[in-house]
Image (tube, rainbow, N blue to C red; front, side, top):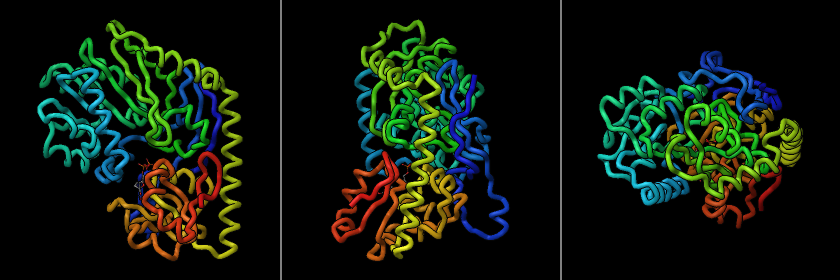
Length: 395
Ligand code: TYD
């Protein structure tokens, strides 16, 4: 049974940055209700009414995984480790974005799957790329041309696909008998621990736990045999999944993480009710802090036009009365406006200057990278604001 526990209100598509805020384009802006629920049968946490992926993953998709140094290094390292551990002959990535992971493998070994045409066009130059949504039809098409795949990698993508049945059945079609599916997604355990409710937005249809993945894959003749904690996106899990009959043994670290999640209560509805109360408190504290700073006439901006901050801005009703603008290094976000709250986005060169007193960390998941980069700002007395793990000022 699915039980609702969190209502984040009316939300726009997190990646739908607006080119203009003319009456016409505002009229076309799409909104939906962001309600999050818990499935008491398999412990899966999901968005109650997912948005149609065709509205989300278009040829204007803004996220470029290569934008961050942290992610470039993380993908290089995981590629090297997976190569060493599984020695795959054929590798496929579902949601290959701009090829940041696949570029670490020889061209001949690689198949890329990416529905966003603007991104698929980048990897097409080098790799065999299918510019399509991942489904059974595509898996059959791939099997006609290629051999079965020993390593399927998918980072921050499986949690975006509403139809898990179709997804896992299609994976089962192309995965070789000893093949391994490796998926990475934000961890529910971390979300609850650090109160990062902004991990809920239209694209994150699911926020997985080891407990839920362990239950779900069983329905598709697959088994979870290992899991690894990783620091990406404020705490994620990397799941290792294989065919039910393969000889991979369940690791002790998986058993430990499953136990820890049970202790944390990720199999119990009450945990999520408590979390929802904390989210409400966080909203009140953030708005109160911003109001206080505004009264004192400080200039506040937001740092990083993340999808996550779309949830925060729209849930807390933070608009350009609070933030002068948002800065972001991504070229195709600059000059646009944030979804729903319509705050202008500038390049850091234009916007991150002497005039800024406070910068809200929209990209809190890159806090370390940003603190390192912005030492001068902090030195001259500039401050950051974050809501993770609680609302506070960073000096
Ligand atoms: P991301 O981590 O992908 O978060 P989400 O999935 O919530 O969108 O996005 C990080 C954004 O922050 C991306 O648009 C690039 C931007 N950014 C900066 O502007 N400056 C920085 O120093 C870093 C690290 C990121």
